[in-house]
Amino acid sequence: MIEITTPAQAYFRKLLAQQNESGLGLRISVNQPGTPNASCDLQFCPQGQHKEDDHVVEYPSFKLFVAAASESWLQEAQIDFEEDSTGGQLNIRAPGIKGSQPAAEAPIERQIEWLLESEINPSLSSHGGRVSLVEITRNMEVVLQFGGGCHGCGMVDVTLKQGIEKSLMQKIPGITAVVDATDHRSGKNPYYARGTKGQSAV
Image 1: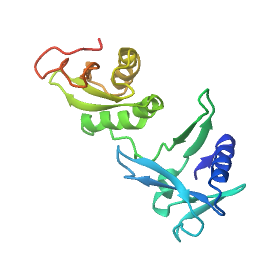
Image 2: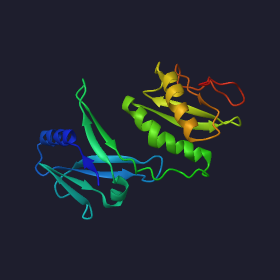
Image 3: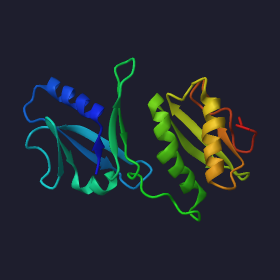
């Protein structure tokens, strides 16, 4: 079952106290479980407004209600709170919500999308960024599109070369390169066009 670390419990107690509402708790569920787009939804839960079949986890001073349909997807999940210079950041790690890793014989597009959503985007999300698959060329180049905080970031080449490309090529045989399709100046894609030489990471 889901774990709430001690720092996160302290954060929630403070947050709930600020709402000045008796019996207020928290409720967590999973949107689109078992897909690359799966995400956790954590909300305030006023007293008496949880679902009858919710699993109830009691912590000092508050309750966490876990949606019954989401319970199996949240096994080994963890909610943590990390303090930083801006106050802190709440992190929800739920390794099972996107389902199981595709088999080696699964289409390469599915394998890449699973790795992007399950491993790479959770890391990029700490900076407000994400990356998505555009296409795979006939030369087995993986064409990616950066967005969010990664769009226009001066470190994106390092992320591409030392992080994403290395991870994809190690885990999926046959990939020859990873290409950034993003125009980090305008938000369009002039650096890569089908049939032309793109901005390669190698």
